[in-house]
Length: 218
Image (tube, rainbow, N blue to C red):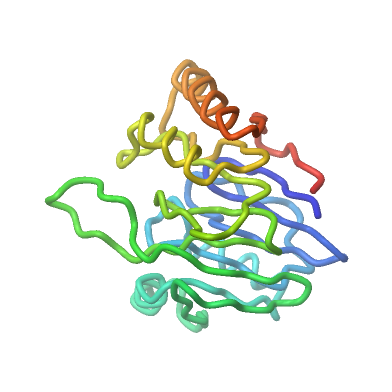
C-alpha cells in the first residue's frame, strides 16, 4: 500500500491498482492521477478539506468513485450549487465500510473546538485497511485499535502543539508523519516536527516528514 502526501491534509492511498483519496481541499493542488479512484473520504465540511471543483474533477476521471463523509459534509455539498448532483454516502463513528480493496473504519464524530463562538461541525477520523489513521481535524483516538501509521495534524486554528503531542502519544503509532501544515511557516513546521517526533518516540515509534508528492510504502 502506497500513501502519497499532498499539500495540507490531503492523501492518496494506492493498492491493487485502485486509489483512495482523503481531504482533497482548497489548500491542495489537485493531483495528476485521478483515474482508478474507488473512494473519496471527506472528514468534515471546511473548505480546506474539500471543494466542489476538486470533487467534480475527480469524479469526471473516476465516475464510479464513492464519497464517504459525515452528515455535515453531505449537507454542505447539497447546499452548494457547484456541487449539484454529487452523491454522498453518510458515515458515522463506529461504522465500517468496504470499498474494495479498501476497508474504512470511522471514529470520532466532532471537529476540535476552534473557539466557543464558532460551531463545532461533524468530523470523522478514518482508519484505512487497519494500517493508516487520518483523524481529520480532531484528536479522536481510535480506542482499542493498534495504529501502525498516523497522519498527525501539526498546525491549525484549533491546534495547540502540546495537545497535538498528547494526541500522538495517546495513539502511539509505530510511525507518524505530519499533515495539516499549510497554516504554518517553514520555521513553524520545523518546530512542530521536532515536538511530534519526540511524542512518537515516547511510544517506541518513529517520525518521518513527507513533502507534497512524497510517499510511504506500507
